[in-house]
Amino acid sequence: DRIAIFEDILTHARPKLILEFGTRSGAGAVWLALQLRSLGIHGCCVITLEQDPVRLAVAQSLFETAGVTQDVVALVGPWRDCLPDVVEVLNGRHLDMLFLGAGDGCGQVEALVAATELGLVTPDCQIILDHALWPGAPRTIWHLHTNPRYCLRLFPISTAAIPCRETEDWIGICSVLHQDIGDSVADRAAEKLNRTLPGPLAPLAAEAVRTWR
Image 1 (cartoon, rainbow, N blue to C red):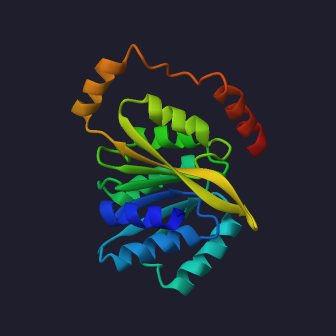
Image 2 (image 1 turned 120 degrees about the vertical axis):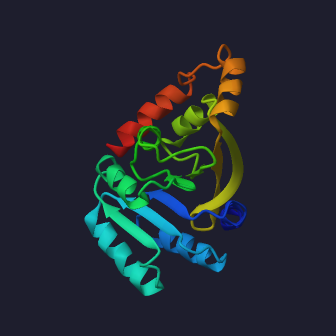
């Protein structure tokens, strides 16, 4: 069950600072804020990015209705423009968890790389890839799997994408390793890993890009 997996992730990780790419209706950010509150995690903050100002206005209304405005920071604009603002919001702190949700038209690998370069993704941070079989996500899975700085686990789930019809999907949970551990893994695996997309994934990634355009 998808919700049960997310509840288990939050219970064990107990994150205080979460970054979410793609606010959409705001339901995800509200659920995260309420879950952290129920776990007794004080001083938590869910930072959510949305490029569509109309969507964000709807989400802001939901935040107020749910009473989580003090726990959610919503930023509007392309994620590339928002990431420097995230750095300011964190004010020297590091993320505990990063949510990448497939289906937002977001370049997931590019967003992850940019966040890492800004120092937002550090060791012990958890990266959650939701809807890991949706267009665009397999490329992200490959990036995480072949990078020795990450430890990726995939969990199969069933989702009701169409009423009364279940479809297969995955959730990816990825830990960022400490530098010395990552270096050790990299030394052993350097000659074995092929960082380019395998044959079947290359056309799939290209098709996903065309779809979002």
